[in-house]
Length: 173
Ligand SMILES: CC(C)(COP(=O)(O)OP(=O)(O)OC[C@H]1O[C@@H](n2cnc3c(N)ncnc32)[C@H](O)[C@@H]1OP(=O)(O)O)[C@@H](O)C(=O)NCCC(=O)NCCS
Image 1 (cartoon, rainbow, N blue to C red):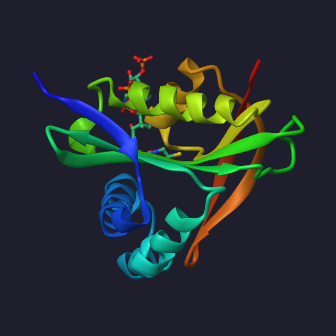
Image 2 (image 1 turned 90 degrees about the horizontal axis):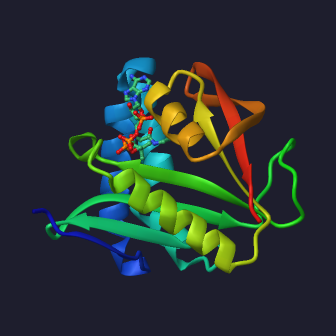
């Protein structure tokens, strides 16, 4: 039986998160934009220095999930970050919840989401929200099962490609 382990992601994990983030993003979205636009976006968004800076920021807690010692997924949160349409005085953005495709459907998504909610509630948040591509059907089904509902939308651009992200939110007790 596989051993699933979750731990805080620290600045020294920047290379691991940069690699996981880029691999998962590519696996999930490679068909929606040109290879050139994709690589430029990945470098800008998941580059090592960018990732290290994010992990050094106390308002952006992150957790790394390992399966049998192999980095397989992560979450990154933004405490106090909001988007129009998100209700609540103290919201948290679930900026990333990423699992490699080979690890989907094993219950690891639930482990990551439970931890995201635990961190969010421990900070005293009254809402958690996220943006998701309108055609990411697997993620949408997953979020709806976790009680998220649509509250808005925004434009998401990768190079020349313009897409619509749905904003989903879930109030917290
Ligand atoms: C989002 C993510 C963390 C969920 O983890 P997971 O292990 O895949 O989640 P689960 O298998 O528990 O749930 C997926 C749900 O989607 C459903 N599903 C699978 N493929 C689907 C499809 N093509 N269309 C609609 N629903 C689908 C599954 O049946 C399941 O729903 P159910 O439990 O109600 O039956 C994971 O898929 C992931 O990291 N994806 C790639 C990165 C990503 O898209 N992140 C989110 C960006 S906003």
